[in-house]
Length: 391
Image (cartoon, rainbow, N blue to C red; front, side):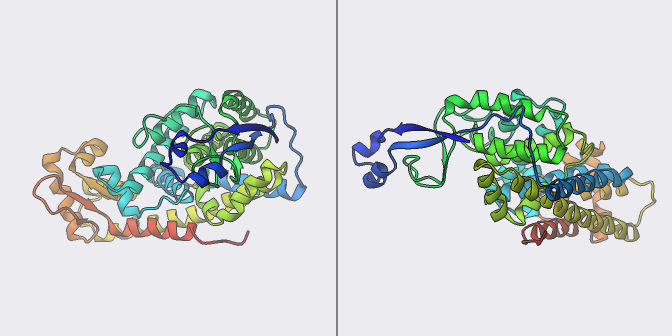
């Protein structure tokens, strides 16, 4: 990566004493902005040990995707939501499984939970657009992420300088100054060309493309979450995953210090660290994901002994739905299972009596229920993801 010398003018508000004038003066003037290397035809040479670890992790991802078999429908939404929550957590956006699930069904005023739901929408957009990794797809991912909170920037390349660290008034003294906004379109085109290659080991390609995206930093906000959504789109595009979203961000969350250090090393010319970090994160994520699936499978199996109803009753269909939608209302049952809202209590009451769900709304209309055991399993997954691990 190279750098170019640019000049940041003193903000107008600082001239009139509205802002912290001394800080504004320090952060203005000449600065160095990154010029990302072209990677479209890059030949990445990595140590054999790193390549071997990446290959092992890729096989683990593919095996996890395949082994869910006929149970895939129950866990697709769970794993995607878990990935969105972990990716948001990397940006210090946290919320409980209950808050996220409630925001999905009921909306509400909990900012972080709503942002995580938007991140899940971005992940869905990424997976849905995986057949084509291009500029339009990346813009659509960002739009899905940012439209609910910052519609004025959603799905648009930035038109201003951005930087990481430092102060709010200018890029001087920042930890990293992204490329000038005029360089973004060409840099993204180069990234897309690299991401579309079929002659690069998949996990290495995903890791390098992700690091390049974070280096370009093409948006005013939401770059980290969009970059990790792009990661999922590439895994699907290259057929490493075919049906599920492997919660790789949950692996990255376990050691964010190494993750951010690897991005810095990439900008300094060392691609091996981001590949190593991505491989370790993927392996950790698969192990955590397997445990989550196992926990949820055991919970659902135990419910079968507690539900007093024929095996062909729609009560069991509602119980199946709770694995992926642990907070629900009558409207959701009608949308997902075709159960008319007027008949919903016929299927809800036996689950209450079995101690599987509880009502948490105190009102006569627009009632909603939750499955505490499922939510506890999801919170346990998030807690495990937040622990530092030893590769």
